[in-house]
Length: 218
Image (cartoon, rainbow, N blue to C red; front, top):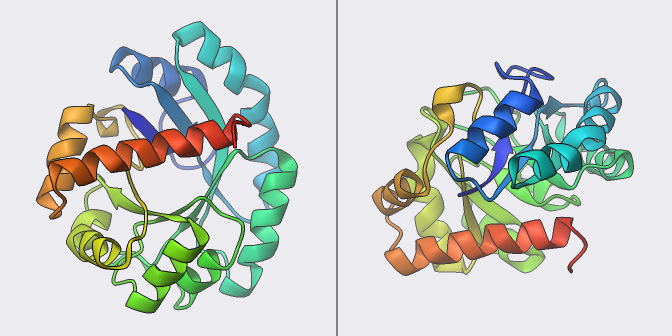
């Protein structure tokens, strides 16, 4: 399992980074990004602390650990600035909290995220075809999520991505120990969203490519 969307106590997660990464390692994870909720008020607190410990935790537990951020409920007009600031602070994976069906995310967030320097647009809700085409053009991954609530639009996201040739990844958006999942459960959720077995394998490859890019291989 490669999971590029998780949360620690630096936002609303339950676990410190050491325990989060340890639990992921025990489940057989190969790579994990810690992407706590951030905006322009707190990224300078979160990202450097994650960056300081990520490599050592990865070496200790036997997986790749990446420092990241999830830009969450950031006003659309600030997203590009926030993404740039996150990169400058050391974020290796930048996620935008998309227009989920179950939260009052500002309209225009999906579009602004797709115009910024990000890696993943998370749980983008009823994303438009034009926006999915934009994701495909910019090689920004759209997320199939295992998280309850946000997952309500997985089928729509999968269908639109397949139609437009956009890249997909499967993430957990973990906040608690029980949110981490096995690759088999991730596969079942992806198939439930309408992806085929080969499509899910491509999701894994897309995640691997993001990890390689984050490590400087691209």
